Image (cartoon, rainbow, N blue to C red):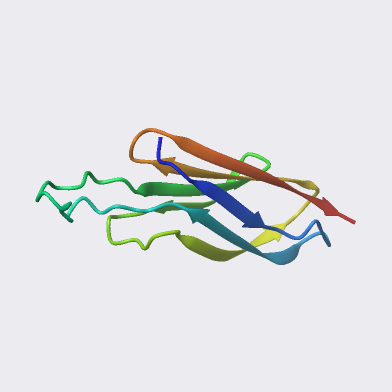
Length: 109
């Protein structure tokens, strides 16, 4: 497991039915490309978040595949339409098999 990995998500707590909201996500992660060498000349193994998904009430909103050129601490900002009260589920997949999740509820009023 990569150390110090911390997902952060910002989602409005409420919205009107059919409103488009802005979602912001950031995950703290070193994102090692696998192309650099350490002080002894050994290749540092690749360790990146290779996929990010977002679902709303079980329906896919966003599915992103990331490659080694992605920056450290990847940040995503995107829009999503909120048709009803529900929950957003955010999932980050690490090369080492670890999965990081966060959820945020939105109330439609």
